Structure formats: C-alpha cells, structure tokens
Amino acid sequence: MKIKTLFVSLIFLFFSGFTFAQDEEGSLLDLLEEEEVTTYASASFKTTLVVNLPSIENTHAGVLDFKIMHRFGYLNTGFYDLFGLDQATTRLAFVYGITDKIEVGFGRSTLNKNWDGFTKWRILWQSSGTKNMPVSLSLFANASYRSINYPDDDIRTIYPSSNFYYTFQALIARKFNENLTLQLMPSMVHRNLIDYPEEKNDVYSLGFSGRVKLSNRVSLNLEYFYSFPNQLASDIVNPLSIGVDLETGGHVFQLLLTNATGMVPDAVITETTGKWSKGDIRFGFNISRVFTIVDMEKQKVRKEKRKNS
Amino acid sequence: MKKIFLLIVVLSISGITSAQGKYFTRDGHIDFFSSTSVEDIKANNNKVTCILDAETGNIEFAVLMKAFEFKKALMEEHFNENYVESEKYPKSKFKGNIQNIDDIDFSKDGSYEVDVVGQLMIHGETNDVSAKGTINITEGNVKVFSEFQIVLEDYKIEIPGVVEDKIAKALLITIDATMKPFNR
Image (cartoon, rainbow over all chains, first blue to last red):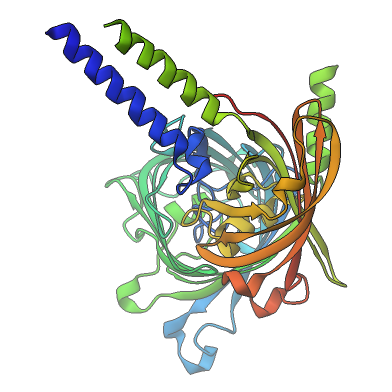
C-alpha cells in the first residue's frame, strides 16, 4: 500500500513538472531559478553630512567633494542685523574617497581659525539578499587645531598642544526603507584644554539623526546630540539642527536651522550655547560639489592590473 | 509496477525533450547611451538574464537595474535613486516574440536578420516595442544582437529642469547576449 502511494505521488510530481515545462503561456523566465544577489543599501543620506556632523555616507572612491558651509547670526537679533544675515562664519572642506569605504578630508573654519583633518571608515555595510546585514557601521575621527592667538593669562600658559581637540564617533545607521534612514552616534570629544576645573576633558555624548525623503531630490534631516550630565560648563546646551537637502545632479544644497555656531564636531557637541526656546537659531547652508578625479572605468582597470601583478 | 516505472521513465524523458530547443544566459550585455551637446552618458550591464524558445520564437530578458555600471559613481547613485527608482522597481523585463523564427535553422551555423515585437517594462511602466536584430548561430550557441531607441517619457522617468540639457530624451539601447542550450 505504502509503496503504491509513493508511486502515485511520484507520478503526480512528474506530471506537474511535465505540465510546467509545457506551459507556454507563462513566463519563460520562470524556468530559470531566481539568482540570489546581495543588495547594498545606498543613498541613505544625500551627502556625507546630515546637518553639521557626518552621515553614514562616504564620498565615492575617486571622488573629491568640496564643501562650503555657512552659518549666519541668530535669528532673534532682529531687523538691525537682518535676522543674523549680517554676521557669518564659514568652513571650507575637501573630502576625498580613497575607496568606497575610506574617506579622508580637511577643513578650515573662520571660527577660532580652526584647521581640522578627519577620516571615516565604513566597517559594516547594510545589505539584503545572499548577505544579510541589518545596519551600517562607520568609524569617524576628527582632529582639530585652533590657530587663533590666545593671550597667555596669569594662571596658565597656552601650549600649542592646548589647542588640539579630538572627536571620535561610531555611526550606526539603518535605511529602513526608501524614505526613512535613522542613525545613532555614540561619540567622545577629547579637549586638551578646558576653561573650568569642573568640566571634563573627555566628553561622552549620544547623537541621533535621521532623514525623511520628501521627494526623489528633497529630504528633511534632523540631528541632535545629547551630552551626558556633569561634563560641560553650565551654559552649554545640546545641539539641535534641522535641514532640508536639495539635490541637483552634481550639487547638494543643505538649507538648515541650528543653534550651534561651530561646524567642526568638537565645537558643535561641546560649545553650543544657543537656546532654541529663546530664538538663538541660526540660518545656514552647506553646499557640496563633487568632482570625479578617478572615474570608475579607470578604477576597474587599476584593480585588474593589481590582481594580475 | 513495471508499467508504472516505464511511465515514469517516459514522462521524465519527455519532460527533458520538451525543454530542449531553449537557450539562455545570465551574463548577457545591455548598455544604454544618452548623447547631448553637453554630455554623453553610457552605462553597461553585464548581468542580463535572457531566455529564448527556438520553437515558438518567444524571447525574454530580465535586467537587474542596480547592475548598471556608470563612469561616474554619483551618476550611478542618481540613476538608481532618482530616475529608475531601483528599490521600487528592481528589474526591467522584456517579453517578446521573434516574428520570423521559422527562418532560423538552429542546427547549423549562420546569421539571420530578425524582427522582434513585444512588451518592455521599465520603471513599472509597460510599452509595446518592436526592433530589428540579428541572430548568429555558432557551434550550437545563439548570439542575439539588437539596437533600438526608447523614449524616457514613455516609462515615466522624469528629467528635472536643471539637468535637462545633459540627459537625452531618447536613449539608444544595445543588447548583446550569447545564449547556451538550456537543459533542465
């Protein structure tokens, strides 16, 4: 009995296979098994900055990104200062993608005559398909040097090393769907020199940022850093920034509102004094313009050469 | 019992036979070319799946949109993100028929001009297309080649004003795929 049932089911199986092969109405492509591929999350943010601080995105390999960042004065300064437009502080930065996973850059800010150098390394890349990875992870480090002349005071001498500030961040991001990306940023800022003894040289904070795509070329961004208590002077507040990204081919324009004055990470996280509730809000913009230095065809040729040699 | 065995054998053989006369590849080539006075843009895709039924002349293509490779990385990102919306519409497909399939002798080497009509689906939009192409038979392999134009507007691929003079309204598509016999 059992053998018979087995045979019957076998026959059915063959029949069904047979019918399938004969079915000319369906798609021929169905005959081929779907090939599994790995899809990596791309364009989680429009550019390498969310508003003031880094996003999970890297500058593509062989691409140079020139950033022009501008912050105006507080909106609450009124008509006399044209709502802050009379004042401005600037940062210029160049970022280059060595590979798709490693970028390096440097910048110069008018505030504190600050020089900064930075790098971002992609450790994990969110993907689905054959390789499944729920989040992307990058490590970011920035060293900044304030070249502005501080007068020596009676209490202490200012050494060149006193003017160095360091920021280390882990960027953990997930592109939930086409429209929503969220990012978490455990961060540490080390300051060689602090103003008051009750402040800490090492400041730990947790940043949150995200973007919502409004259309294919427009997104709304949010960025907030929470510094854990008892590390900073009492007048320091957490930076909160809102931005809109407009992408037009080779440019990304970021229009933003923020309470932060600085544009280097250490200044944004540990030196923001403006209060949103009082209207200490600055209008500002970032412009990103990319230049392809080594195009992808050349990179492919180089890679193959390296493989062969 | 013996009869059943025989039946199974016959059936499985017939299954194999019926699948013969089909040809396929997974690494066919498609490129598109956009030419304007400002900029020429070309993208290549070497992971095109193609299957052809030599008996009926039915031919189908499946194209993974994220597999298109551009010269500039940002173009590739924008292509997927802004123009064809690869996350929403990961694949483009063509389902068509070679009208003069009876003229082709697949058993010996030769070259044939063919007319193909069918439906092309890109960006979730389907349009009727017809194209001329050639089929080359060499040592049992079937090489298909065709060039035709598509109009971006037909597939609801929007070109914003700022890049209007950089991207052509019609693209030249080139298909080049060598297919092997398909055995199930």
